Each structure stands twice: as C-alpha cells, then as structure tokens.
Amino acid sequence: MNMKLPKAESRDNKRNYKYEKTKYWLYKEEVYEAIRSYIPSPEYTLAECERDLETLVGWESLTIMQDTSDAQTLKEFKNRRYRYQLTDYGVEIERLTIELEN
Image (cartoon, rainbow, N blue to C red; front, side, top):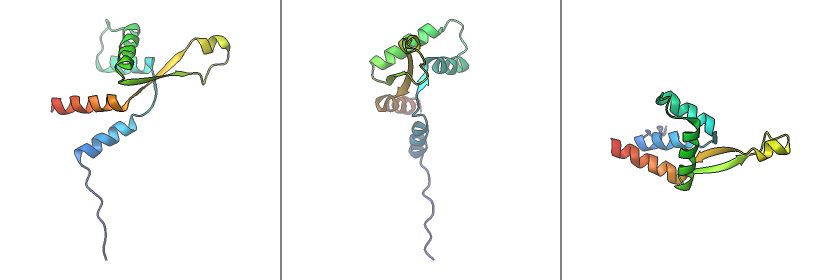
C-alpha cells in the first residue's frame, strides 16, 4: 500500500496562510479598535487613525473601497463609509518586516 503522508508545513506556508486569512475589508473603526487593543494610548485618536490609513493607501499598502451596501438614502450614500484591505504589496512589506525582526 502506497500512502502519501501530508506535507509538513513550513514556516513560510504558515505565514502565507495567515495572510490569506486576512484578506477581508475592514472599517476604520475596526482598525482603530485593533490598534487600541495592542497600544492603549489615549493620545491616538480615530482621526489620526484615519490619516494613517489614508497615508497607507497613498503608499499602495492598502486598497480603499466605498461601502454602499447599507445605504438606504442618498444622504447615507454621500456619507461615504470606506473599507480598507491590505494589498499584495502591503503583505510583502509586512513579510519583510517580520524577516528583519527575526
């Protein structure tokens, strides 16, 4: 009987899986709350977080998309709620940062 054993997961495979799992869109409030849970600084505000997100979009580390799925009125549509997602470029920067830290 010829059985194939499962391929051992390398560190890179685990890391790739981690990034694949994170391919979803986040609101600025979700990003802000995640940052605050790691760095509980009262000086860091939602407005600063939004500026940081805009900077990362400008650097092409994040993609931005207007979320119109819950808009019921024209006013809600014009209110522009954005969602953010890490780009492939952003993933590579994160990987490089992790490699440099190790």
